[in-house]
Length: 183
Image (cartoon, rainbow, N blue to C red; front, side):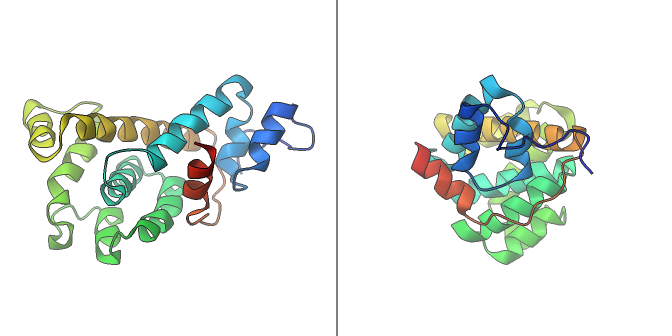
């Protein structure tokens, strides 16, 4: 059971109610709704990360799943396993990431990047070799986008853990579609 009550849309300020009304009904959004002045900017950043990056959506979702796995965020894992499938991540790759099997042959060229993500989540940094690996595999824009995705979803994981967020059924692609509609 969550440690904070969820925002009641019927009693929420107009701006919060109007924002939540266009989103999938997820506990995460109803918790963030308490932070009235940051709700829309926070959603805007999340929406941009889900819909407007140069980063390949398959890599983006694998990075998010790695953040979920490395941080132990079941909430994030449940939501993004469904999204990963929706953007075309093969099931064996999803399984390998969520099982923490970074040496799985199914991960192919993604494995080294996911190891750097694991390092970032666990230590909040990466060594020169890890950063150089990102630079060799990704251009400058994609490198920064990966780091922004890691930071944002680590924040989601921390929030979900701190408030003991109740799990929601997967929203599937509804969150991504809402992000595209709002931008």
